[in-house]
Length: 419
Image (tube, rainbow, N blue to C red; front, side, top):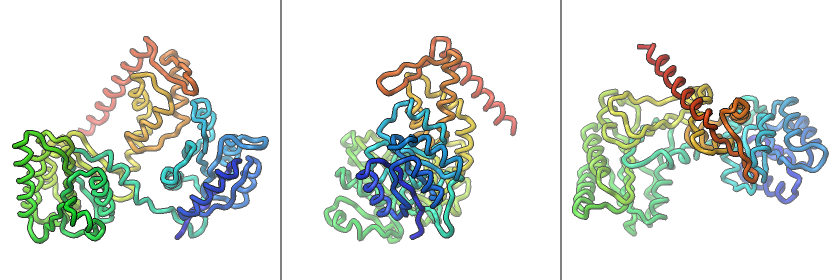
């Protein structure tokens, strides 16, 4: 397997060896483990790695931040910082070197792998060796989907999306949580994986190619039972309607799921997955009516878009990841100001933006903007332990409200101009 070349800079020998073992197991090539900033600069020049994992606290004359700055300046190599210290002062100093990420010790392997993948994928300045390709990112969509799906979710996908992995993840979690699961499909590779659970009736399966009536009768029975009791318990329902040509059956099943979703459940999630190819606007409007969430999977480079609740008179569109990132980054002032409704740290703002929009933003820009607001008297700052919390001053509250209102009005005016 093609792999990225990574340099580890860590002055704790055991930690360095553990990181090397983890990276090697994940398919990356480690070109060295060094303990000082001086050696890190020399090794980066010699091997020109695709990425450097850099501990902030190092032995030797140079700190990790100083070494990272020189590596970035000389070779353009992206750096991920490793640190046990995540106070704002440390992050502010590190942000000046334009790192592509942070990892807080202790580091678990999954977090390590995801952070590296995202860094390699997003950093245009990363130098790549001939014949080396980025590691695949099969789990990126799964992480997002866990947060995006709720109630009755319409999942639109293109054929290059590995939906089996998505369904497998949901089904495994339902079994672990002892939640009844109904899985309806036209074609699937998951039956062998869950044969034991199917035999134990933890999962009810329905092959739609044979009959959709059997499945709809099952939904009717569930609906009747929940209606009589006055409260449904728990249910996960996954319908992979990969034969979207049978539109009448698709609409009928969607209506049954929406009807189920209207009942007061203790825990209920229904995912109706439909291929996007061949869907025209009227059909899309019909099958999206009444659903709680919309999720669009249109390839690895496109964002998963969703709405809560569905705006039924609005057209549904997938949005390019590139466009979405550009909008968030260019609207950073509005996004940051919206976070200042309570005492909050810069680190929390950055994490909040990443979790909400799934966009990595330049950390230095956020801290620079917060510093400017503090200098203007819009924000006051209080250091609690290692954390610096920002809060609006009395005058700042009015400034923020006026500023948000003005930006929102300007956006409406600009977008309205196209009509």
